[in-house]
Length: 357
Image (cartoon, rainbow, N blue to C red; front, side):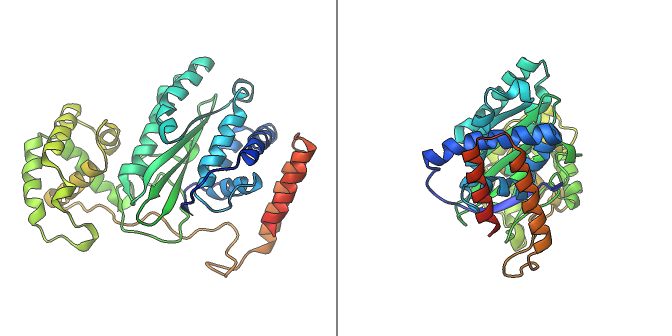
């Protein structure tokens, strides 16, 4: 369970029935309290950042096993379940779906004021991770959910999700502070997806030169960059990154370039952190840096096959039954030791048995 990465899920409509959500709240609370007391707060973050464990967690709570709604509902139940326990437990949950996600910085700040911790590093981690998955990885998924879970010691994990109207699918992005040595170079350790798509991947290892060149261009006078862009639509570009005039608005780009010139970003991460620098700006800078410096950005979709126990159809490999049984045994033991209401425990066991079947 050391892996963090992406999950790829079909979009489902509707919402969790009230009777189910009311039970998900206390059960999620007791499971997390048990995990924290048995294995430590850091282990709670590590498990939430694992796309497989998170999916199994949702199954134990009784929600849809594979839909996009699992992400928002499980995070919502966990946030509600831990409300009021934060100071004793030392685990805080901020953010959520839609408009709630935009309140994440304020919620982090409020929590940090109560425990005497500087909120800025946590607020920065929240904002830069969203920019990476929404702008630096241009895979066709628009973020609409962002949950930030952190401890009183400043460790954190992130669960955020984007949707694609074109494919009616969602991608869930997991982050773990212990695994992040750089926000802009391979920040995800593993990715789960059953299909790849045309992607501009500016956080790929092979995009290092493009990141550096983009930051250099952003720190120069806007006229030089805009002059190069005026000729860009005339280039016979390969299909992997065709550029249309609609992709680059010169008036908007000039405004952004003036801002980046004033900020003079030292590197790509500093550029990415500037307010107003989004997907179109980064795409334009990457393409312009290729035009001027010959530095090509990666178009490798960061998703790849990755499964916990194999697949029922033998793809990518047959189900590993012994490992599967061991997983069930571990989860069964964890639930058996948790101090939860007997009726809730029996229902959890029943759902766990159904999941195993």
